[in-house]
Length: 139
Image 1 (cartoon, rainbow, N blue to C red):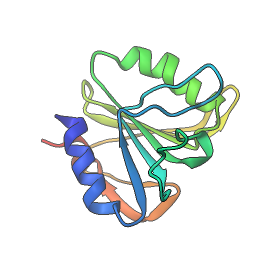
Image 2: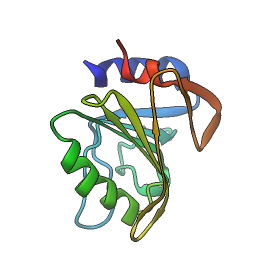
Image 3: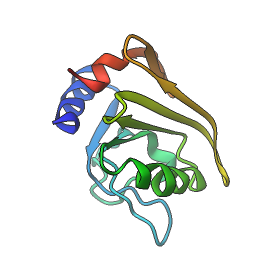
Image 4: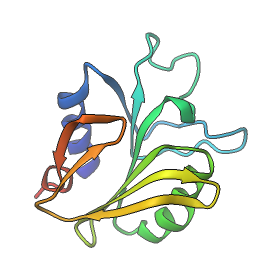
């Protein structure tokens, strides 16, 4: 339910600015095409019909995690950093918080922040739009 709600949420808030991908592949390199739960992408006239999104097209990747939290933290997030995904959000449903990863390096993200209910967060590339963690987590 969280992915569906976030899809609607981001579409309503940002549809004029970005393309929202839902569990669509992002081509990180020649051997890796993960399917993040949500991807916020630069707009393209063909909606990525002729070419899958590449790291340079990504504003934000979001993984919604409950039972997959360990895998997402230890495998997916480092993979995204290695391939220069500028920002990743891990919606941690178990601990009811939002983990934000920014400034990718080959060794992981330099900035890792955890946001709790009642706090605000922005997307680095779209800093004019503010979200509450409550909006991200839902009820």
